[in-house]
Image (cartoon, rainbow, N blue to C red; front, side, top):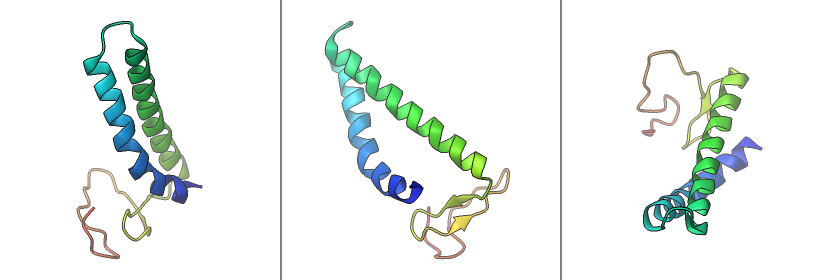
Length: 89
């Protein structure tokens, strides 16, 4: 399930963010467009929060965006390249 989610996430997040941001910036207070923008913002934040909780609950690291190999994330370390495929993250 999460492999499919990861593939769709990159296609859904930019338009959802753009619609939400434009709706909030360009619409008057209390309008339907502003409510749509708030709904997009809530979906954006809720999706991010759920994703973080799932990765933390699994306790197995996160998959590399390029090759899919799980990376064990150690505290206070930033990985800029995957140790398996050597592509930058």
